[in-house]
Length: 486
Ligand SMILES: [Zn+2]
Image (cartoon, rainbow, N blue to C red; front, side):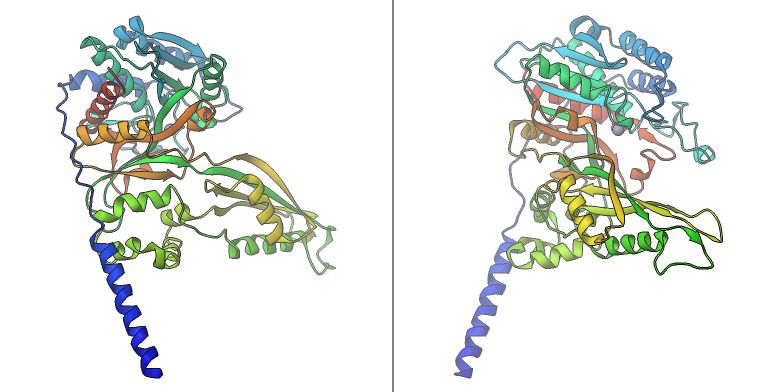
């Protein structure tokens, strides 16, 4: 009997290894070959000068309560109008919400649903105290070492200007779109987009417009961050995580510290925080993070390839490994980050209240309500009041098999042939969320090439774009316009 069971186990193990090996070695890249398209040359000096000039204009978004500097936006609008005369002549231009711009490039075939390309004209300020760390002043637009330097060169004036450069070049070449194209350039993305993107989307909705897709900033081309993949990868984000800030307030009796009660307000908050850190949200590998692995695994090496090719068996192992990293953890989990605690003002006085502010980033599929329920449950303390300070839900997950995604993917393959394409999940937020109601699909991708250290330049010190890459971005948009139907 024992012999029989032993034999059975051996057979099962052999079969299992066989299936796993089969799954691993048949997981090869698609051999679909897209031909590289040689785009006509660009006047590199001219496009460089225009972006450099745009960087010098201080369209800074400081805070929700700080109105944007009108004069600076007026200057930027003037620069745009004078730099792109054919765009100005041939496209309808509307100013919305004070300083946002909406361009309509009427297509010849009204049966094709329109597409909307996005960017934003505002930038974040330079964090006080970090000015000295800049190799070139943040608003100099300096051209040095093959790069354009300053705020907006990565986030996100480059995308506004690259789209306009591409349109101007296409108009010069006599291109006329079949599909109506919209360009939407917000002026307050960095503070939520309430006056810009939200109002543009509301106006389009009022006009009964349904978009095939939107393309906004979001993910980029990265190299050297995905273990086992050497090629640069273009991540087209299908979704963005939600954002929620909760404030916890513990209230107890105050009094003198010489006769303290058993539990204090600060003690209660400390307990709540510690319980939340111990009880993280469960991790799970779901779309779009799972789509990313599906797309990239054929390019990976062992042992990762074997593990991901056999998710039917090894999923718990994979999810637990991903949950240990920083960025990979954020892809598989709604994250919890305690950002502020307050309580107490004097050595010998017990504060009657103490607070903690906690920032959550929600995976698609987890709602604000779910998070509040989880927090209430985990803290389990009636003396702690939980209030929502700020929040927006995670986006929907866009379709990676839809026409819009395929057009973007094809455009990348045609103009950036060294790059792999993969779906992705954006961990930060963008203006795209405002268009959800009127867009079939929303994609978030800009073909900037990032090494491991470049992400810190976004909203950070020494923001700059290599001119060579900027030219690639213009060519990408130019080809995309053709691919959407010309
Ligand atoms: Zn941005």
